[in-house]
Length: 313
Image (tube, rainbow, N blue to C red):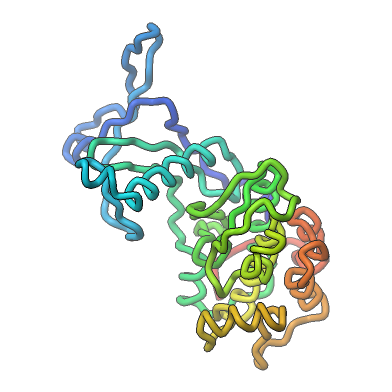
């Protein structure tokens, strides 16, 4: 697919920091032309690279969690659980390498902070682009969807369920390359296709597959991410989140009782191919939903010859 080749051409090189010594320096020190990479002798006799980094301006803020330091902190199960989850997330994702996945470059633990180093994607999320520009042009939607599926196919091939696919969690380069991010509740499994691997209700309700809500009976597998992809392309088609106007509990009840996907607004006219793509994503039986690899081949995603991303209209 053309979008994949574009991503490969425009891909940045990132330096993996795992196993290296990290050293924060001040902006003044950084301006003093300190080398960003030096070496340090290790007990084994080999040179261990030292990466020096400078803290820039705040570009966003999410969860803030203190490293457990005092006896009270260490007995606080919530603090310990969050920090251990961050470490586990980093370990799970440190070896992932795909143009449509945000790279985890490394982490540094100090007595007061756990810093996770990620690839910087300057264009914002699909959700922020939708808020700024409104619903996307059809070719942009196709290109972005193909790239999302390419990244998801890679994740699933590595045994990883994302479990929180939504427009907020897909970042966009200014060149039009999409990258799946935010693996805070992702899970690795030995068999991505086996239902019942997980039964906890994880994710965000408006993007959640029906089998996640009723997971205590059969569990769920990688097909929950396919449902969520359907919700993401719904966002690009409509410029709105799925189930707009409904509260979370009403959506949970609707999915549990009727097992129908989010309705398409009256002012959105889908082509037959687009509607077929939608129906495949929102198949009630997970076994009837295509895999990411199969869905990438859907004729709806075929781009116009010679098309390339030049920004949002």
